[in-house]
Length: 355
Ligand code: KG4
Ligand code: ZN
Image (cartoon, rainbow, N blue to C red):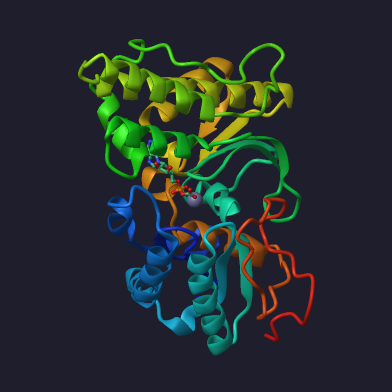
């Protein structure tokens, strides 16, 4: 039984994740985070993240198996994030995945981290329709993608951010506001008591001559920093809740506006919003409101699957296995800046895993 269970391992940043998926069903997953260890530095310290992965990975994999009521011998394939991400952090997951795949004699699949974010939604809402529009909003990426068959067809990039990612904007502005790391959830919490119309922050790249699918958040970050400086230099207390609500409104407005234009231009009737920033309450609410008005079906993974986790990598692995995708060679290496073209890392050299 359970020869089709895929173990997914995620270690690209500060979360160590393991998940078990079979036929699109999530059987169990576990997560450890080194977030608290980075808090006093105001951002992820790569060396600390890598060391934390080493300490957590075995435990996390065992916990996922326990939750699913499975043993190592039930694992039929191993999928692992090979990029993009922090090199040292990625190495830990890839080394663990290789060891397990080799030891168990099962295929190994290298997975693109962002494809994992997309696949996370399938664990809750089933297979993705072909085609669908995907808005990926994470700490390092903000992209609009036209996705057909996630594991069989190339992923079409309609637009990316020209500078900061949406999550990065939240994280950096939170720091300026004196909110704790990670900034996104802190802004979201602070915004609950704020007035989104209290400050009129810009809506970058939304003019008639602008690229409709490109994003830019560094100007917004600067506007928030200037607003903060101006108030502080006048000796005034910073209305953090208003600043947070207005910033969140600007980010949510730009993201959802562009995503809906992309759906309309390409005649696509499903929008999937994924990545850490998809956990933002205003992004979720505004996407819902605008999709309803436009007659577009909105899919957003549940909160626990929005931020980095191992289940989403297992979900891609499961799709790859079911699509008969060739496994990665056991000498597969990490690719810290892998562009998102395919969900799987394509084996280009060497022998494939001999299993
Ligand atoms: O996808 P993710 O977990 O990791 C990356 O692959 O980057 O995304 C992390 C990002 C961080 O920038 C974090 O501040 C942001 O997602 N984030 C949020 C919220 N929860 C996480 N941003 C806004 N509101 C939230 N509730
Ligand atoms: Zn991520």
